[in-house]
Structure formats: C-alpha cells, structure tokens
Image 1 (tube, rainbow, N blue to C red):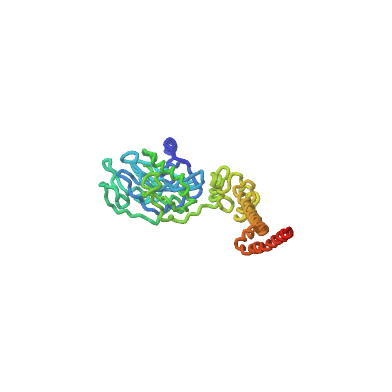
Image 2 (cartoon, rainbow, N blue to C red):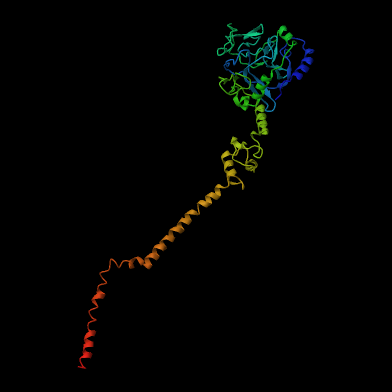
Length: 397
C-alpha cells in the first residue's frame, strides 16, 4: 500500500505548481502517483455514526488502492479532530486522466478545494462543504447533515441541504462525476495544505489490514462503512453498509491477478509456510500438515479434477500423513472379533472338564445317603462266625 508522506507531497506540490495551466479535473489537485486502469466501485450507502465528542469533524469514506493485492479497499468514514482550529477537510477522490484513474489525496486547508464533484454526502454534496463552519475557533455543526444528537453540543444550527442520493459515483470521468474545477478551486490548490493527521493515517492502515474491506471480498458493500473514531472498527460506533452503491465488476484480468497475488501472499500457499492453504476446487486444506500431500494432488490431478477425489487421495496416499492413523485403527478393529471368538471356545472346555471330573456329583451323596444303609444290612451275616466258634468249643466238652 502506498501512503502519502508530507515530504513527498511537498515535492509534488513544487513540481505541479509550475505545470497547472488551466482548470481541468486532472490538474485541480495533486496526484500522489497512483493510477489504476479500471474504476473503483461506487460509493456504498451507509449512515453516519454519532459524533463521539465535540470538536471532531466528519471525514467521508472512500475507496483506496492497495498495490500489494491489486485491489481497491474501503477506508471507512470517521470523525476526526482537525490538526488545528480553522481548517476544513477536502476529501480524497479519483479522476480519469491519461488512460487511467489517478488518486488525489485529501488534505486540510483554510478552504475546501476541488474533490472531483463526487457526492460523498453528510455535507459534501460535490462542491464545497455544507456541514458546518468555523467561528472564533469554534466549529458550528449543521444538524441537518451531521449526527450530533448524542453529545451536548450547543454550537449547532439547521440548514436544509439538497442531496442527490442517486449519485454514487466514486470518481470523476467517463461514467462518473463530470464536474470541473472553478478558478477559485484551482487557486485553493496552491494554498497551504496540511496532510492527513496520524489518526487518519491509522484509519487507512487499519482498513488496508482488514481483508473484508477489499472490494474483491465485499463487492462494493463493506461490512464496516463508517466508524465513530479512526481505526475503531469494533463496538457500537461501527456502521455496516446498507447496500452497495451499484454494480461492480472489475476486468477478468484484474480478478485473475488478484487471485494470483492472494496466493502469493499465503492464502493459497504451501502448507509448510501457511497452516491453512486452499486446495484445488476451493476446498481448504488446513488438515494437511507439512509434508505437502496437496502438492502430490496438484501434480497428479488435472485442474478440472473433482475436489472430492482429491480429498480422498490426500487422505489415503501420503505415508506420513496425519490421516494415515485411521487405516491402522481399522486393522486393529478387525483383530478384536477373532480374539472374542477364541475366548468363547475356551470357556466351553472349562465346562467340559468340570463335567468329566464330576466332583460335584460326588458331593451329591448327602442327597443319596439312603443308599448307604444297604452296607449296614450286610452286617447281619457276621453272626454266622459265632456259630462256628461255638462248634469248636463243643468238641472239647
């Protein structure tokens, strides 16, 4: 992203002062060297957040350019304190010139300069500023175009401002605003200018670091259209765009280049450098650890290969892949059934051995005790021996 620096602005001012020869849109303000061959999206439709505290002035949102991603991104409108009392803000704008759309940085000055005739709203109706004025180092707010209802501000007034709400063009040129600078506006270009404050620069940097604010992501309807304070993109002071200001379709070559740059920046990079790459077919490959199974898929499959088949191959083929444990787990699940079958046959032999030894039936005599009396009945045969003894005694007598 290219940011305007005060030293660079001074140098460009010095060079441009000698080149301005007439009131044309291209010469009305100093470009900082950014030119794009396709137009920015239309201005989104959004509401102004409430002023956070007295003394702040409204800086409307605009589309900026990021060379790193070859994409426009939205810089949310915000309330910001001026660098010093008495200064007014001239918004940034885009203008068609020399075969491209040149960017013109906004600035603070004693008067409002030319900003391409772009209708930013909230007092910026394409020419000048209807949102307030300075008097005795106090800024008076026009309540008809400023949201100052939540702060106790006494220096307010009401003045009707006619706003062309149908004008959403964000640039000056064919298909956009057609205003040309007046001689007075051209003269303002040579007056003392103060570059954006540190808070405003912080707002731009925060926007450039927010992927959802890129035009390729929000298609002209940024999720953060305005913020109560610069760079404060969370909380109750943030405002979402109600809708895009119109259709936006960048050239196919630009879309392709944006995709290639996103890949180079890591959104579709190899897993070794980024844990969340994007696999073929738009599927995320966050589950793939370093080892690059996706590389094998890319080299082994044509571009039109179905993503489902790619996923199956990345799960099964790589040897050291995080998804290889499941096959061993399945092999382990098959042995348990045989183990269970071997345990079951082991139990029947125990039952058979018990049946063979039959110790339990021997313990059964107590219930079969009645059969034992027959042995006692056999005892009566013992008396016969005594008769034999008696016979032996009788002869001696």
